[in-house]
Image (cartoon, rainbow, N blue to C red; front, side):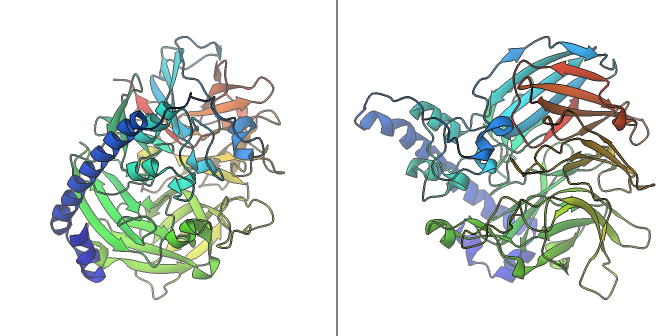
Length: 527
């Protein structure tokens, strides 16, 4: 890694994949050795310490809204081969719905953050009108060490102020944000580390995956897979925690890493998601900043600094970061875009679920950034690489509070008509918007939004589109969402006809327990 750090910043950012790769591979080899030694020390150390009688696991704090109710962890793994079904499941719906989310194994150290729980996968296998279910924790090195010690050892985001030194040394992923199928592998993802592979049927953990030693550093939880199967992804803080560099990568349809590049961002930022089009990679840098100095002195590791504004890099997919164009916008934050595409006149359109202020994060001094949790609405950015302005245009598309926008993924990076989102404020655990949940379908051709809401205290998860057939028209298929039922404290897998969302689910598969508030998932067809 010292060799990479020694490169002048402008040279490092323009380095070709062939120039970067030997440095990164050397870093991987060194990191693997550090990891192996850390695991050995972590496994041996308990044997050489005085061993008091093991205590009971501590209760989860009762005053943390993201550890109560719908957000409370599920402390059991189970298999259910035949879920009861209401309605009739479509016979042409055959495959697996995978879903991931934070589910802490033990009470945390220090202040808890919703993003900091261990990953738990939930898998629904749908076949011939029947549904089987399985859930498993992702058994990362962090999870394994805490399981052996029978207590939580980590602060949120691995904050060294609260974390056991063994946890810090492990540098383990949480693998709690997304789960994707690509190149014949099922990968559990979170944005600060490499992917973690799991078995697609049993959900058994298989270990970290670094593309055969070609990936160094973190990988976003939101890779983009285009119609040809090529996967584009990035990793922020690419040269160390809270650093401004962002690594860009491309994997071919068979899962081989074929391109790596390094971009210098204007400041260290939490870059959760991005978009791609046929011709461009669009990488937003929002003023949600990271700081090691803050983390080490007890202040927020990530904080909202609106005076820095929003910066957006437009990078050619077939070029390099040396050809990047930078655009500016007002301070805002986007966890999740819906889609992006190129227009016939050369502009780039990005549909974003945008917050005016980053939710869940304070100001640098720890004060709240807003009086009440902000909500996001769908907006459209237009960037013109051929124009004379360095600002992007922004126009509202819809005023429903929402999150977790999705689309018919066959149209990723292409002009599209149909979009879907969870209509509600998922980042507001207990406020006035907390129970405003639902599933929404926006028709971009007409601007109309069709909306379905469950019971007043029920919660809908991210809607995931499944085409009726591989050659079905855009939007002709099903929407799948996991719905929490407040009255029974259980959850259902809901299946909607995507062409008539407002009519409600056409079928429900019923679990006998609650699936906690989670983040993202994806569908994998059978066969």
